[in-house]
Length: 557
Image (cartoon, rainbow, N blue to C red; front, side, top):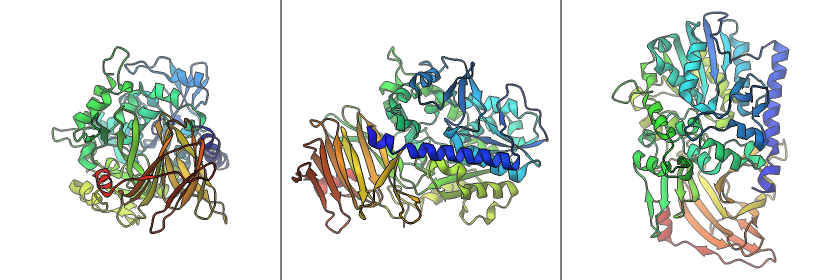
């Protein structure tokens, strides 16, 4: 995007760095060492028990052998050195960098400091850092080697780290016996539509998205085995609705209702093909990986074979993509979403494993889960064996956990009883600027989130989200229907806009228009009439085309 999303978003980077710096200061004050399991040989255990923290994708710094830092870097030339081949092999020899100053997974450092100060020396407390590009299987094998001298471990895993932990458990009965507890935090056990979003747009990391590096990232992630392992799996439809819909040549839409159909569609996307036109092997490798986590012919997840405890902490209340809709030219049209997730992972994917002892939920975004004070307290209580005292514990039947959890949502996946009114604005070949709420206060776009700052205490309050659709097109979802903004077109001949009201995931009103000038002014109101006004840069009203009730019904199918 142009200036609006990049320049105002610098605050997110500064906040991430601030979190890490505070963690470093804490370490200096309380004498907590910065240690990580990064050696190539087995660890010599200080005692026989350890708490192992596993970051998610992008959560480990990577460097060249000469020490040159590559991830996270904002320089395209350095990012390109992360490249893998079309069959998923690294093109360069990289090393793990054991660095606290890593904004990619700042929350893991916060969690580490908290757990170290609470449980050392009763437990060794370690961060397991790994090459997250290459998939979970290789990471799990490294983890197995590195913890072999421990007789009792507790795993605290974020996001893809939960898949690494699952594979580690699947490697051997010995691993399962020595693992007394696993705490999976925001883990996409059945994948995430966000993974598909990353493949299509390169919108991989919110702070890199601010630096116009999406094209570079897009060219890289399509060859990372790990991203294929995060795509919706064959079990995704067990808990979530179909996630791919596309417009056919005759104008009708088609929803892919089977996993095989969805994977067939994805494998035919440009990013899923090798240069010779054949499908990349990472698709089948990802299928094999997830199958390896099932210990019997009934598809029971490996955690059900854990003789001790498996706990899940999930984020909810964040607008989370649940379906991707393509145009007939195969470009991304828009995303459907609901608030039963953390902005990245739906709750159904995060609680797929019916073998969990407890499922705990917290209102948090995916990226902030590991630094969330409520999550940290939950983790501490689980480790101490007092998790039943947590107010937000969901008491579940092991074999029906998913069913019981879904009873809290409507057919569209929205949490019943929440504020589920949304305003959706889609701009093709353009972007929004000068956003204000009903009080005339400025709205700030920071990465993929829209905020407003409370005038009294300066707290940043989430107001909505932004989704890159590719081709200089963007989807904005506002949590409040009173908003005004300008539309800045990239191409006046192509710039079009759709504005829709949704309630509980259902469209109640939708209008569209062409943007006749380089800048237009828009006002959207939440009054009974649902007024929408668009004017060009001279103040002249722009004609709006409103969809009929029948058209709305089709959109709501």
